[in-house]
Image 1: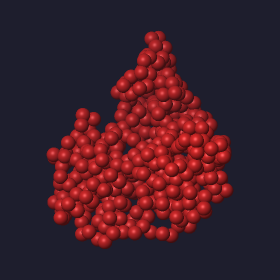
Image 2: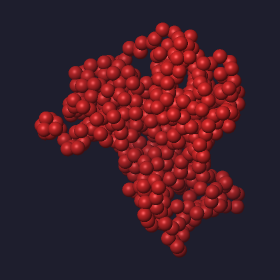
Image 3: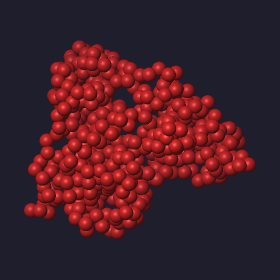
Image 4: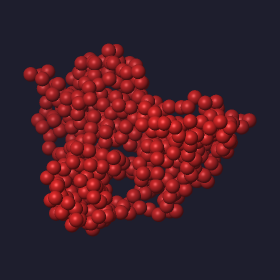
Amino acid sequence: MSEVNEKVKKVRPNRQPMPIQDAHDRIRNFNEVAIGYSEEQALLEASRCLDCKKPLCIDGCPVDVDIPGFIKLITQKEYQQAINKIKEKNNLPAICGRVCPQESQCEKLCILGKKALPVAIGRLERFVADWDLANGHNQAEKAAASGKKIAVVGSGPSGLTAAADLAKLGHEVTVMEALHIPGGVMVYGIPEFRLPKSIVQHEIKNIQNLGVKIACNQVVGKINTVDELLERGYDAVFIGTGAGLPYFMDIPGENLNGVYSANEFLTRVNLMKAYQFPQYLTPVRIGKRVAVIGAGNVAMDSARTPLRLGTEESYIVYRRSENEMPARLEEIEHAREEGVQFKLLTSPIEIIGDENGWVKGMICQQYELGEPDESGRRRPIPIKGSEYELQVDTIIMAIGQGPNPLVPQTTPDLQINSHGNIVAEENTGLTSKPGVFAGGDIVTGAATVIQAMGAGKKAANAIHKYLTEKSG
């Protein structure tokens, strides 16, 4: 430990800040907020890594990237080798470098973080991935063809990761996507200003270059069932359909015009490009005042987007305090910089409409915090007589979402739990149905991109073992 302490004394205590667009400029466009490190900044930040003999940061990575390994290669300016090192484990590095909550995963365990600020692992991953987008040329090696066919249902992070890993192992993989563009939540749920869609499509193209086939407009459960896929020659099926069923509050007025689920609102803007109306014929009505119910990352995305569409006021309405907000600190800070207003310890109890059936406001109640509940957060307790009216034109519900029910409902013998999630083994993704595996939000409930990717990797390894043993 003394050796580590000596190393800590020699490094810069502060890490390189991420260059970003000025808040006054960025709320007028949908360009990416974070600009990314320059080479000089990346080299300075990489030099802070202690190159620990027993690196704990890897333990915090759901896909087990050799973090000290790729950072050391950055310090040597071996950027091609650095990205190759990352791609040994991570098939979507440019995406993960942008949206992963590194502060609660790899960076949280960084040994330097015990004495100073941790190494900016996510920002360095993004730097190398962006270098690869501009300069990279290496293609991952593939094993000899196995003769086995695998269907992957859903092209979100878990499905794409499973597909890529299985293709590298020599299997023939077809990804079936219900929407007209692949990418799942990465294209419909995360705004352009946080994750440019060109980045997502480039990463998907790299996966297709491995031989993965992607079939869009394929609603498994309608066009084909899982059983029919198995009957038609697929040797295994991986289900990665995510958590696409939005939750609502079940309060009066929730069916009025102008009440959106976050899924619908963000899909209209991101996937269907409402921000480019009338070039793309997907209008979205927001009015002068927008209220977003919830305080997770999806809520922050939903509150920041209307400002870019021209609304005058955007509110986050959350029944707990800022300390309990589940969103990343970075997203909260960016939202506040852009002018999002936070109405904390507050929740709507009724939505009010006008004579034409459109939202014109909501009755809110104020809260105080009591003892922690089962989530570990302090329980909100309503304050009697604290009700007041908040005038808004649009309300976006961002209080969570459940598993997409279509595939479980159309697949007999597939065990689900009381929440509608598919029951699958944690380390393999194996379900109750032979030859069928599952992973990501459809199993765990709504989680992060990188956690879904970790589930996809585990399932890919298990599927490969299953097919190998079946052949043997």
